[in-house]
Amino acid sequence: MPKIRPITDLRNTNEISEICHAVCEPIFITKNGYGDLVVMSIETYEAMIEVAATDTAISESEAELLADGQLHDARAALSTLRRKHFG
Image (cartoon, rainbow, N blue to C red):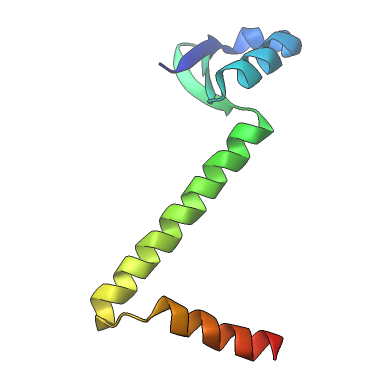
C-alpha cells in the first residue's frame, strides 16, 4: 500500500528519510490534498531504473524478433564476441 504524506511532513527530514529506507518504495507527498511530489531512497530509485532498463531491453528484443523473425544461437554469438574482443 503506498505511503501518502502531506507536504508539511517534509519539515521533519529525518522521519521522511527513515520511512523511505524502511518501506523501500516511493512516498507520495500531497499539497492541498492533491499529489505533488514523490520521495524515495537512492536505493529504491536505482532499483526502479534497473528494472526499467531491463524491461526496455526485453521489449526491444521482442520487437526485433517480430520484425525479422531470426533467432541467433547464443553459443555461436558469444564465441564470435570473444574472438572479436579478446583475440
